[in-house]
Length: 334
Image (cartoon, rainbow, N blue to C red; front, side, top):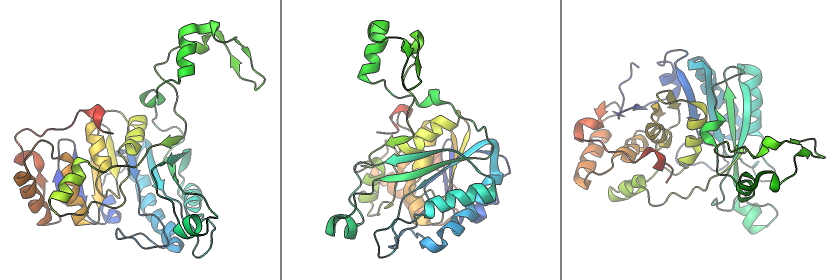
């Protein structure tokens, strides 16, 4: 890329700038996966720059149009979009669905599958309809669109298997003593091979992931240096699921609205190359805290001051740390 990065690590680089411009610097057909959570189309303006619902869909489509050309034919884009209400009435906005339909109809994206991120820790909102008038329930689910460039993108469910239920464990242990192999009324053929151990269960497209980060390394360093953490962080498990599911080690993952760079950090733990864009210099400078394990406060402060000194510092964090230490890769979601 022509633009100089703010910082880089073993596997990735973070860039400050308008993603629309930075996307033009990426070679066509070179990215394996884009995982991102754009500023949502909320009624109340947030400090991280969300757009009005009426203009949001057009705005987001300008990014996905460019994203389409830089993805490999086997590549995908995963977009996390929170829900919203229309102004002044207890009626839901359809902006996230309008975006989905227009992206597929106008830009030739394919909806590989829709996912729903269930955040059980989300606070009740909107206050007017949920807390005050008590006529709506808590909105705790985000739509997550998995869009692919072609009809058969790279994907492997074996990489995201989940633990078997207690009933399935019993079935695996007891076999046909626990069930009768036969055709069920539903039409499902439960054969004698139904109790085969495949290493885990196939996950559903509802992802129950609480967003409860409160004492992470990132937030600790933000507090110690008097910096405010990004107010709209998603949990590491969310990008982690799709990175494991849709890429292989050493593939390249891009986040065009990086914020605190959760996607880049998770990609690094999973041995994927990564690129992160964000227009807010301060937020992206703070995101380097995620990569600064096992070093003292004074060195962290020195690195942070260097990152704040300019938008295109080109700081190689490894030059300032004799041995750049990362947490074990399997611990990225903790």
